[in-house]
Length: 581
Image (cartoon, rainbow, N blue to C red; front, top):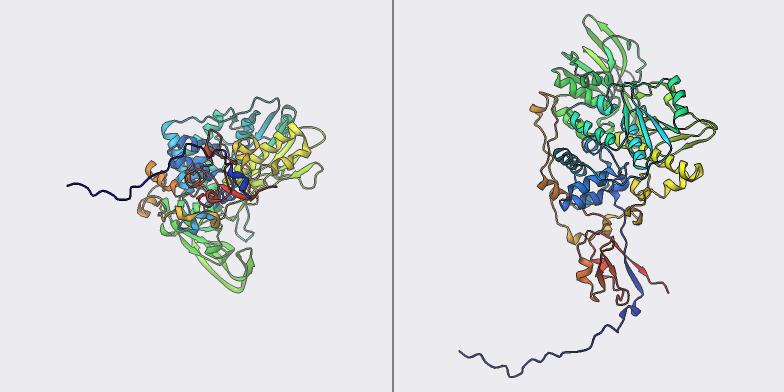
């Protein structure tokens, strides 16, 4: 059958001229530009990790590169992926859409992947410097200081009194939270960087004086290893002991007797760890806290799992007296009442005349810790003293610079804050040696992540991260049309019936497939992930691909400044500004 002929044929005009000479960029009064910014999670991370970039690399299956990105800012990904309280997730913009990205699970996955395949990092390292630095204490602060100083080219020797390195990571965190192989891998990474660790080498005042002659600087990160007193009658009974000592015995391979009921005084992570360990040793744990559950400094998830495992909690009670009664202990408890608010936590006071007694078998104190010796604390008011956000430098007229860090100088006592302390110390010492004492503060200020106080070693060493705008991307600045609702990965873990039977690690590994899917949930706030929306939507085809670090540039000869590229950028990695006359 013949097709009907169109009585009005369509003619397409053809031009043999180019419009290249019509440079429409001269019409522009708004100026779009690539402008990578700062993600809120990185600002919230005390170690200043480049989280948005880490997730972007992981989503592309570039696990080694993502892991190396962590190591540039934090030498303990295996540890922090397990025990960090992940304040980054509390500031994740994704929370406003559905749920925060499981950043800690992804960090642990990347670290476990590196362990599994024996991956060796390739990191920038500056040429060797002449100065030598001694580090006292092989905990997270001391080892982090040594790691970053080694990156900056300094020879570091770490002196540890215990038989093994790790500090509180080695002796104060139970195996069900931090397996030994994960910790040892991170420590071995520090040694592979060129750091020498001497264990079983306590530093007495006499030894310190000798060190001051052999080294140009000394970092003291001895931590808080001695418990605090409850200041109640009967506290010196043999049935009363320190929670930290109990945890150390467990990590040394001992199994202290825990039959009957053990009372644990405190509400921090140490108290929770002691209580959960008691349950695993076949005892009953009674957790006594002077405030309310919501006021406890321990991680909420840890508290929740402790209660699931059978730990009993009594709130608003404080120890008043301890007495022995035959083969048991009678603990007198003073009831407390809410007396106001104290920075978001309840301020409590004794409820006069209200006490009660409990019969128990032993007491573990976990009400806080302090330095083993006063000399580990930084001096107060000395001339030449510089107090930074995480460290204190003391410069005398003679001898090396003394730097105090870790729990000694951090308001928040956590592993990731100890890492931040070690990094800050390394930057401060390097600046001191290169540019002088007065340059330390402005140099560190230039390395802040967003508004701080976190610092970036990549920025300090002149990496690409230094080119970013410190503006912190808000949820309202994300184009959420490009992001659908995706459920957060559920962290697999042992059932509670399995957990209480042993000290096996509770949280299980996630697969590479799950890790990539979870990292794809990340908005990558402020970063260009090469999605090409700017290229696709530009009506003037003025977005040009190239080999620049950004991957593209704008040809302003033809860009009319319509701003469509900026509006359609999902991650706010572009900005639109008024054209300068």
